[in-house]
Image 1 (cartoon, one colour):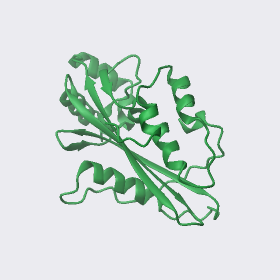
Image 2: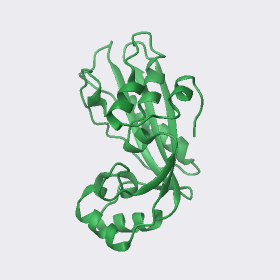
Image 3: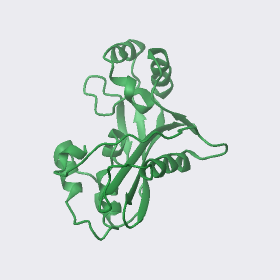
Image 4: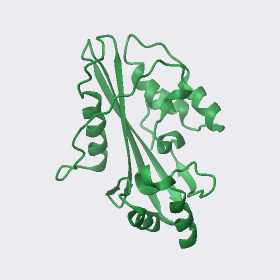
Length: 205
């Protein structure tokens, strides 16, 4: 999704411990992971560089559903999510190397899954698409079409809420607005109902 924006971006992996801490809420957990990724040392980063990190989790009944380890786990996750409502939380953390300035935010979206069949689950797993997705699904999948409704940010469920990203970037004096909301809606081909509220600083969920 960041490729939709004409930025000079370099990807760097962050080798952090993603274990959940005792009594840690799902939201605190995903915010901590994003913040730890953003502060992970990058030897080739310059003082003027800005680091953007994110993490997305699927939460069902307070349990975090990560990426499935195998096809059996993918089947179990999709079966549990079927015809139910769950939360998708995407946390973003941004830091500027030289100034030490950093900010973080989280976007929460409620997703209602459709009542798909066991055979549909098996066919979707065969495609390989669920295996690198939190909760074992991609909301934008046209063939599986897992969700029937959502409340919040569609882009966040895909992995990057661009309105929240720009809202955070505007806290840095080096950043000039890029119209990320418009870019997002143009690519996803829909009119977002929460953009103005997000950009106004509202906590939308």
